[in-house]
Amino acid sequence: NAGVTQTPKFQVLKTGQSMTLQCAQDMNHNSMYWYRQDPGMGLRLIYYSASEGTTDKGEVPNGYNVSRLNKREFSLRLESAAPSQTSVYFCASRILGGMEPQHFGDGTRLSIL
Amino acid sequence: GENVEQHPSTLSVQEGDSAVIKCTYSDSASNYFPWYKQELGKRPQLIIDIRSNVGEKKDQRIAVTLNKTAKHFSLHITETQPEDSAVYFCAALIYDKIIFGKGTRLHILP
Image (tube, rainbow over the protein chains, first blue to last red):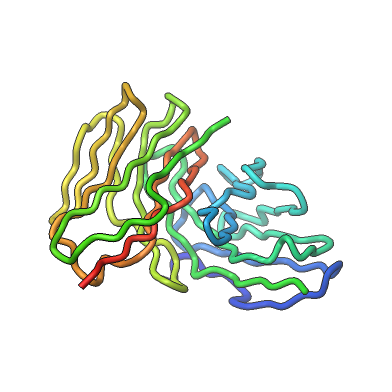
């Protein structure tokens, strides 16, 4: 039982390159989330998917797109990477509608030069 | 919009003393409040949570209190130990979004 798996763990990009961060969960959760974490800023919600087939913007969606490929997978895409998107990206999942916690992946450390 | 404020941003306490971290939330529809601990380079890990129909919850040295009227909740760690040094995040569930505070870096001094 792997929980939430994120790939890759590390990535360095040049400004303007595109990149897709992958996230998969094996806990049969309905809801999935993407956060970015910057020093002193906590975890800021980029996009979330309450259930398969739906996606919604969070606090900081600009510059990102997402795809809920199926119940297990939720990907985050940077179409044209910018240095301001250098961050640690966390994917999380939880049961829809319940007062239950999120389970986090190990994160992707992304640097954009 | 939805907002979670967390204070203080940094907290230093002597080993064995208590630590208190406070959070406020803006949306009265929030009904679930988890707390996470994050060690350097690791993922956030849930340490305790509280639901809106409960005023207080305790788990060994950790307790959380909730005041729905004032829209604030707090984390209390008693008898602090060196392994409590980490960053702590409060969060609030608003419909299906979980919004986080900016975190508190807790230092346990020897």
